[in-house]
Figure 1: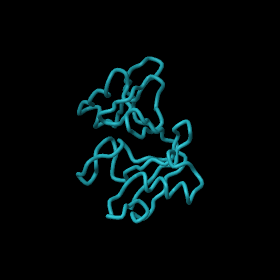
Figure 2: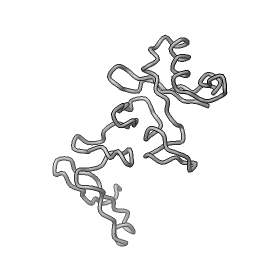
Figure 3: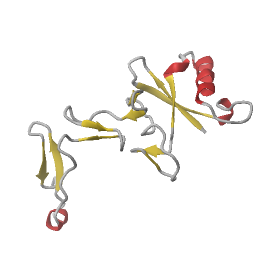
Figure 4: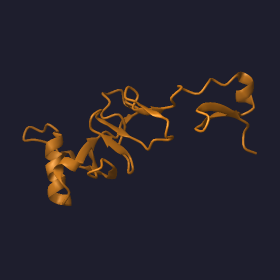
Length: 143
């Protein structure tokens, strides 16, 4: 099964479709993105270059079945297509966060949240990103 993201001229994912591999295969049975794009243009009245193939099995630049990751993340509606990095990006969680192209994920400008101590974990505390202070803040669980 092949999956394609329909993107806008502004590179926003508008829709994700799946289709039988027969619609993406050449005469020798080799799956080719351009064949799928042409099929989708013909049958969906949307330009071929705005259909980008995506992998259902890729998340955070890892293939969940151990294969080769493809385009960083499986596309979803609202994601951004980044042609320069060949990655589908989810929405940016905070204005200050930056792209990590190795993991196909957003990161805070100061890195990951600190590790919880055993006591903090036992008390169900969590770190949350404080955009105003550009810091990871520890919070008590919500009652």
